[in-house]
Length: 312
View 1 (cartoon, helix red, strand yellow):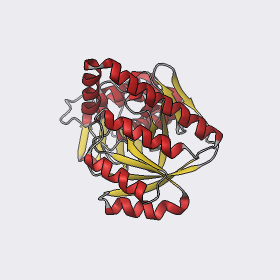
View 2: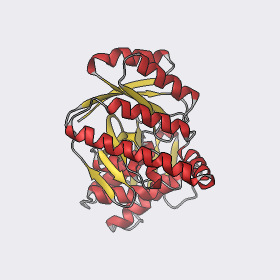
View 3: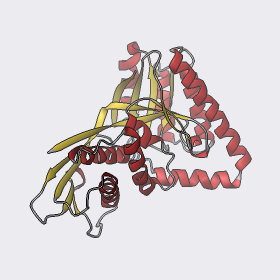
């Protein structure tokens, strides 16, 4: 049996703007992860994919009975083709995840990454992180329609990533570690739908939206400079301004704004949504001493799950 894992992620800066050529920053979240196990199966059983969390059993090549089965099948097909192994294998592939679904933490990309890693290791293929990222991007297209490429990049490389579409991911070092609190609003964030809505709005008023996206890009560049140099004093203010711009492009929500306000009032240095928006997660930049107070305030505001992570 071969086992592989992949961590979740959050976007710090640049969501939505990254689709339009602006930079974005994302970091891994090691507190949650997806797991894939690959094992041999009985002769002539073929490739069977199991996802107990979803009550799903799917045999490769059979009609997909659920939407969840399609990305799993695509991931396996593409991975086997890249590895150069015939699809006519007798394999049992089981996937599970502790990453909340549809919350902007890269659940789909992490599951696909774990599957590709497990298959690569099982067949001793020696896949590089860039190979894994490229394969997972194909699955992301099925999930999201026009993905930016940032989720598969940060999850495959497991490092903070500065990403500009068309230029490839740039892994970078953190000058001074910092802490985030992540709060789940409990509201699903439908990435494909939100991205499509932003696209329609951009097409109707390109000048305004391009101006907003350019400012988001400037914030991401300033944030990268702050993070790499370890001069973090203004990072929270950059997050707060990014949140204001996300509200201007109508991807926030009452739940998100309630959580953002609660975090700031409890002592967070900055707070914003992370991911597609209209639900999903809120991230708050904190000093270690403010962790408990900010976490408690977010729970009181209605967070269904709160976790802290350290970026280093």
